[in-house]
Image 1 (tube, rainbow, N blue to C red):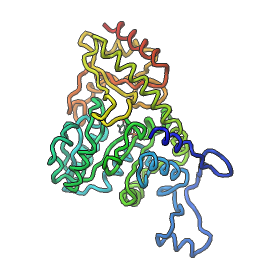
Image 2: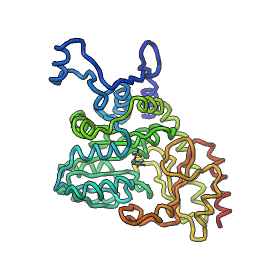
Image 3: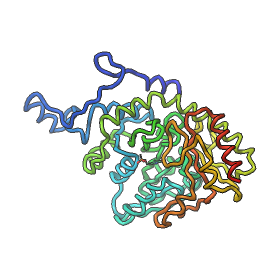
Image 4: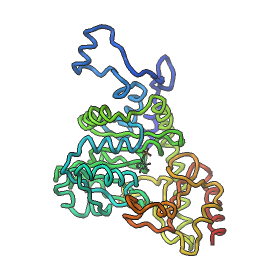
Length: 379
Ligand SMILES: *Cc1c(COP(=O)(O)O)cnc(C)c1O
């Protein structure tokens, strides 16, 4: 798969011999005569009308993402949260129930609790393994919201079994595939209905864009485009779509490098006495993943001073987000210090000794040296 994906993403589709797509910086698109305009208004053809709904540069990115995930169609949004809220609000109605994985991305949790619940949608949270193990968990559930691996703890779900149970119960399945990317996991091929991404992470790959994308069947994507993209209006800008298309071309090569760094860290962390727990899924049939992304978390022993550890790091910088060139550390302790209300880390239970690492594209041995020296200084 990886070879063909890399080849697919490198395909030239510019104009006049250019190897990059043009940035079509136009809000509207005109028609040659009344008949052409009237036909388009009547729903014929797919010529762009207005950039809130369709734009050629954005469409080039959408088309690549649909092909990368093996879906029929895709629709881009201004952020990952735009994609998540756009996908969910297109299908949920008051009285519906959502079953969600524990340790879901914190702002997805806030979307559920602060916005969807007050609109009359019920949400229940379950350990990732339960979706496959309990064949009746999705009975009466309108939509299953999955992350495999999930945020913070990086626990996985058996997607094929979950999708089979969901189908029997008439439940729609949605997965956030930001961690694995299509390089390491293709959820649609396992029967999941809708795949979405925060394209701000690995799809962009350079920490210079905030964006989201949803991939699925023609019908599902058309519903999202006409309802939540058009009516809530969180569309992706043409320039950002251009950056994302550029990012996609190096995605397989970058993921190979992240995998190598994560494998090195997994091996060394397992032999580090101050590491109480390592949260990083092992690739293979058990997890359904064909490689390791560079995002993992570790729980450090009680004797390790988290503040000193973070401040002693040199290559790893302190910050949120992940998936770019630079390595980052995010200490749970700082997030737990926020108000516990609507705080997913409080809800699902996370140790203040947990730190999340985003291994970037620096030399893995340099990153390990940095981690090890900071740990020594923090004890
Ligand atoms: C960052 C992130 C999001 C939200 O994406 P934005 O582009 O920041 O809106 C969603 N899911 C996961 C797993 C993320 O890490």
